[in-house]
Length: 409
Image (cartoon, rainbow, N blue to C red; front, side):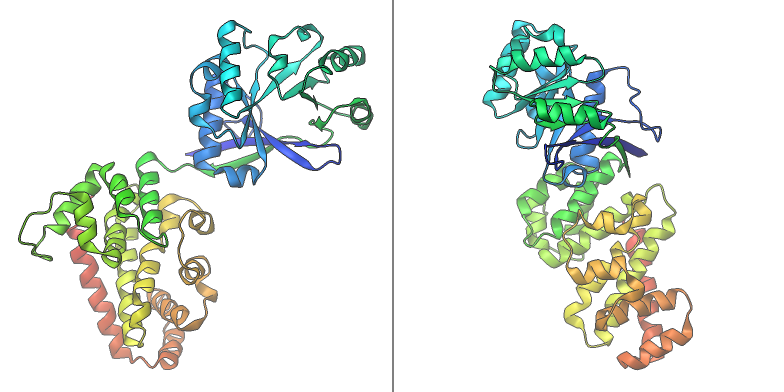
């Protein structure tokens, strides 16, 4: 499923971007089309924090987020970080005692509050004393209205933001009159952002892959992630209690199983256990081919005298179809997984990879494409005989068939 989000920049007096307002979108039309403000805001929160990633959406800048009555009273502070979000209270929110108490509580928790669509009829708003930003709609107010707003709000600590500014004259007037921030079509229209959503269970698998490639694997944290997926938990305990390990006592603890595996085997097991599920809606050949690539690359690395690098090449092969499995560009996926630079380069630019590792992985791909002249050239360069390649490939085919048949989804 494709997700959409729009952002519109907010500028300071020097026309530097101060923040972005995040806006709900559900199609390429780039217009608001939701029937419920609260649901729209929840979608924006989820998209910006999880699907797109806040750094991609706004960099290090703040985000303005519309909040309705329900979000304000119930769950704002549990969903978004105070350091990054300015809560924009919609003009439709009733100024009840309950709302004022909620805003007071949010301020104490470190949140900044903005009053949306402020006009000449809101000069007695009880939230004025709690607001950090007052947004004045230039399409809904006259110049006389704005002058009254400027005069009335000057006794409060809030700064004024001119929104829906559409002409240079309006911008100059607002800046000279005391407005601090500016937003509107004169500066920039909302820009549409889009990304492919990852279904829930796939997202958890990507998190697990990311976790095992951190500089140091946190066994306790990894165990928590594995326990969330019943199928993974089952696979792990079945694997650790198989004849492959022959432990005297049966292992029933996820954390103990991961500890016994050790870092190298954990990485290998995670790839083997998660890929079939990541590709559950794709041809099975994707998974099998990933396994063949992984084992083939590992075998060739050992044959080329690169045993110390064989594990990196194994991981490269296993993850080489991740873009097809998730329907997302490989560079985008790899921003979420802390892989070594060598693996990242091989996955993003396999055709231009350099060094011995690059040659080994290129050999895997040339063999797959039946590009025999190129394969022969690399063989000579690495000092590997054609017979060794045939043996390494047959071995990888047999290994992949055995593992895949023993790893049901």
